[in-house]
Image (cartoon, rainbow, N blue to C red; front, side, top):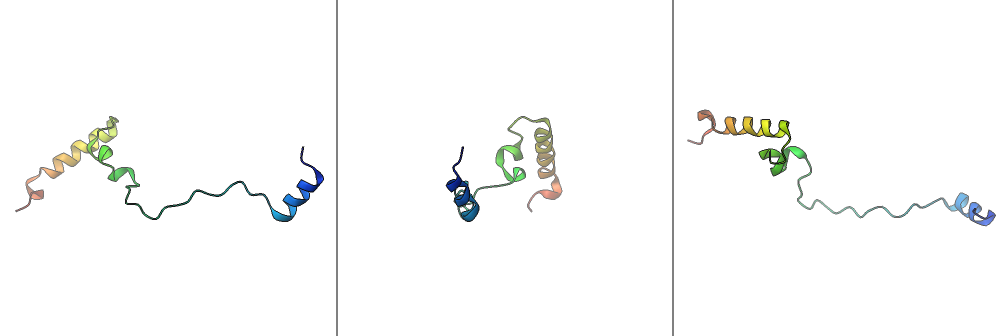
Length: 68
C-alpha cells in the first residue's frame, strides 16, 4: 500500500505512466492495407484479397488500360 507521502506526491505532481514511444518522422513505410504488396497481389490468402487481386489483374489487362 502507498504511504501518505506517496499519495500526496501523486496528487501534487500527477502520475506518470512512462514516456510515450518516440514517433519517428515518416520513414517511408506503407501504412494502409490497400497499398501493401501482399494485400495488393492477394498473397496473404484471404478470399477477398485474392478476388480483388484477380479484378485488379483483369482491369490491368484491358485493352483500354494498355499504354499506347
